[in-house]
Image (cartoon, rainbow, N blue to C red; front, side, top):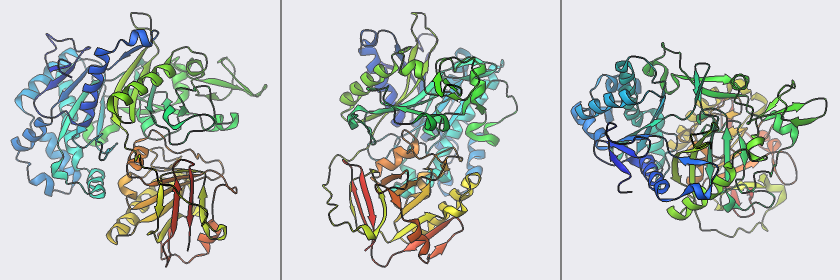
Length: 577
């Protein structure tokens, strides 16, 4: 990496070419990944490997983690901030505190040179590590950075840096530290300031395509192999994809291979996206948080911007087929057919190559976050922007699992899409959603209830099997229960259960999924009632719960359950004894 990371000086250094640093100390997990990407891109001739697509990283500046320590010392926060449990009070104190003179001076320089929207990201020492991912635990702030007064832009940027520092002490972060048995005072925070990738249209700013790609696929189908990897993409800002919302999935090696029927494609198509509001002058970071300048917009507005031309097809009701003719009235299906099927942009090939190269270079499976700019660069080609890379935590040791002991009449649930490997014989509790009370407009209430129940289970040292409809951990409350991992941390098995007209696919590529896979938690999908997969709700409902919280019931078994998971065949069973 030597020579690829340079001291911040936009007057003498090409900000588009190098990762720049401010201050001393570690770059943190995300920062190390970006330095790796910078070095890799500088040393590999991607023009010869993917000749019709530029591969770059955005202009990036990293404030070293030493500045976080200096910030705490300068403002006498070394002890008080760890004792203070009121997060809002911490945020206020941090905002009124002062950054070091060097950071202040260089951030003022930064906004003089950079007038594009910005992403201000956390980069903790523990983030993206090989031990625990801490995915989505700390804060990211998106700034329009377009006020004509550079002092206003500086104030927003400095505030975002301080609030990223403060996010170490958020309730979500504290719960996560407790769940993985880490000490919060050992965490130190670097901060990444990155030019946001996208286009300005109608006073909003967002990329044509954002996505996540992994070099290992836990749920391959047809002739795919796990090592072929997968990608998840959507229109607009990447928070849509990492939030586990309804995005398009494909295998970079076999982009034409589809699992979903036409009906499912229509039903599960992306129907909104996120963009930066470039006209907002009333929101504030302290009052409105990470989404202060981010707006959730109907996908029709992306079509008005002309950005669905290559990202969506139209369902022709008269002929019961999908067409590229956008003059036809009908549902828009965001399936990126022009890119994936008709080779408008060699995105699948590029991802396939990059995942393979990065996996070999890191010596482990990897995940990358990226954005695709379909507009032609000066050389006439679109650009694939690499935003982040992290190692995937995956246990390589496989245990052969014998299902011959399974007794059909004692099965509580069965899945042929189970992730995890091994045998559990210590769990005595099942927590399940009372589906008769399920209401997709109340999923936030369900998440809060589940968080309180998890705290109780944690206090009593009880692990459990968790069963609920839709996607666990989604940030879209209409597609499942939007818990954070720390709110179900005592779940040893997580089951996503299908209900009529409800999404069933696991949240591949999301922060939640990344945290779950790192914990070797059983993660089962029960998409439909059949001989191959089902949840015996009649049995569960017939049991007397030891606790009924309203939405959830807890069934305690005198004898531990038997959980069998075969990671190779994806077969999984939970059986009572």
